[in-house]
Length: 367
Image (cartoon, rainbow, N blue to C red; front, side, top):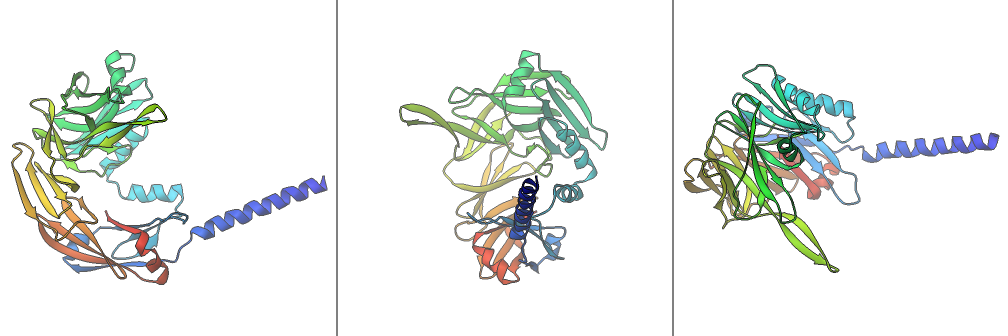
């Protein structure tokens, strides 16, 4: 018996030792600093997320603001929850709770508030909205209905709002046999009609501005437009050892769903696009050459402006502003553009040797 207790004690020491090592292995003393070179108002309430990732190394994350730099790698679930809650407004918290109660959910934000759709397993389809500061209202459809069952089991691409009605684009089938479908919920959200969307090829893979799961910080859809920007995907067949398999891929170019003709149209195909955003009734897309293509989503009229010099390596849109990240010796420069013109610039610098050692494998993202 004594020998058994000794073995147990030895096992406990080993476990405790491994646990201590795991904690120490992810601790970091790396420090960063954010310095604004022009127009500091652009950076008010902004945070730069620094993420270090390398094969066979422990991933590390940091938050850098004008006030401080702090590691966020080892936060507990409780601390993560508190940080996320701090970033949500009152209405966002309500929607977050609503989506959290469902097995799967998507939502969209408009100028009046949030609308969304979710499911409880395969049993129920739940439509919800929170508009004009009022309480959340919901309507539940039973999954026993064959039409509702098809919506629940479909692959959801995303949402848009047209004439105060919530629309869900989804697809049925796979491996080259898919159909792109549209479920339209009336303004009272107690009735739904389903129709098929015409596609030249492929299927709608995503709809711009859709929030998935608990994410409530996507683009705000401020107004109805005839054309709704979407992504289009397809399947590639691969034959190996006599067996055929299918891989899903994204088709190149820019696409939109035409709400009048009920079909998906190609907006642009001859350019490689780095990133894109929607501002009011316009789609703005950044090409790999640094040009911004501006497309009116009611008329499809297009204009092009030169915004960035040289080829683009890292850039993204946030709240209608374009952020470009450029590497320098001890960190990065982040330039900010609006309407094709630079309006601000800042640097994120590595403050010590540990931070400098991460630079070649670090990414910087503003939120």
